[in-house]
Structures are given as C-alpha cells and as structure tokens.
Amino acid sequence: MPSNPTSDLPVHHAVIAYFWAPWHLRRMPRATPEDRMTRAVWCRDHCATLAGRWILLGFALWMIQISPLGFVFVIGGWPVLGLLFPVTFMVGIGHLVAHLVAQKKAGPPKIDPPVERDEE
Image (cartoon, rainbow, N blue to C red; front, side, top):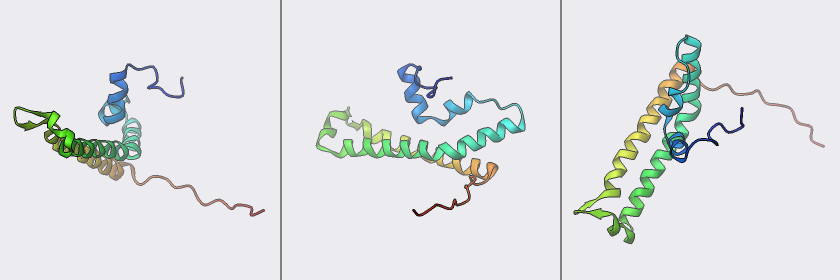
C-alpha cells in the first residue's frame, strides 16, 4: 500500500478528500460496532482539521470579495464569493459538530504518558 493513498487519485478526488469528511467515511466499513467505533475515532481525529479548512476557505472568499479585486466576482449585482462565505462557514460548523459527536462516542484521544529524558 502506498504511503499516501490519495497520491494516485484524480485531482478532483484529491480536492474532495482535502475538504470532505463524508468522502473518507463513505470508504470505511460500518457493519460492526468496531467498525463504527473506528469511524468515530477517525472523525474525532480529523473533522476539526477539515472544519478549519472550510472556515479558512470561507474567510479567504470573503476577503477576496471585499478587496478591490472583488468587483470582478459580482455577477448581475450579486457578490458571488460573498454569497459562498455563509455556505462554507456552515459546512465548517457541520464538520465541527461531527467532531463533537464523534468525540462523545469515541471518548477523548489517548495521550501517551510522559517519558523521562536523559539530560546529558
């Protein structure tokens, strides 16, 4: 198995994998309770990162829209990028909610105990 399973995907699949948790979760089995717990652990570990990507994308769209370059993205009097901001923000909040629900199911992440270090 390659070290990066998304390296041989088409570009649009790589972009979808970069932003969408359901894309990853759809590829994971969900038949047994152990499989569902594995999905919850994956979502607990990754959904907050995906939410941050969506919120950052929305912020970037909003900043471009209110910049002097924003007049390029006005079609028929509608600020297109400004209208996409609430959509990306809501998708990011949805990923945060999925993260919180998964953390409630799977519990907090395991933390390794501290390791003694030699000070030489």
